[in-house]
Length: 281
Image (tube, rainbow, N blue to C red):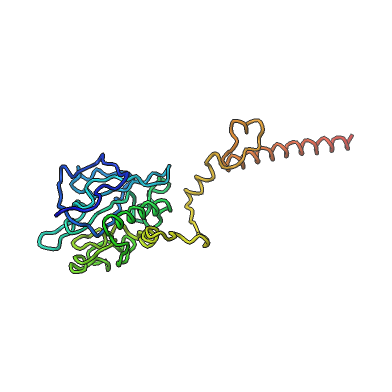
């Protein structure tokens, strides 16, 4: 089959290219299957034998995704189970994307303050960059900016009977965007509750999040402790040290206030004692 359209995503890194070792099948992809790696860095994919077409790695410092490409857009990759005698999965009409991060709330809680992407709570910049990929796939390869399936939260998204796994017939006729949790012959539940509606809305040029609604953010004890003890938060009121250290941690500021108050208490006590002694004399 002749592959049409550009096969390399603009800007994608080719340092982990596996098509030379695993040639794959040429096809015209009109489906994107989204995954999460359940890790915090670019996987080795067993030397490419389990690799997708693309991996999106978060760059938290610069608030963007770094893309790695492992196979052509229209070449079958290897991240899905494909059982003998059933439907085709990897080799049907799918381009696969792994997002470095987790969809598991237990893993999200365990990683805590370690920088990572949590699929149900992607930051705006991750949604933006995933949407940019979806927009390119639509413009260059005709992948519809639609889903037509429900993304289910992990761990209930795991298993053959998770309620969202496609039948063979539905899978064969499907086009658009789905997740590993939807693919027949597979058990995985990633990418969990991926905000696919926000991604596709952004890809179409719409707003990804309401700008007028309040957002409630839950902070863990570790989050509060980190904020309380992190330097560079509160303006340093001490002229003797503020030039070299203009901002201090909230905990440092409170400690400094306590020291000043105790010194004032000592001076007040001393003054009171002197006044009492003067009256007695």
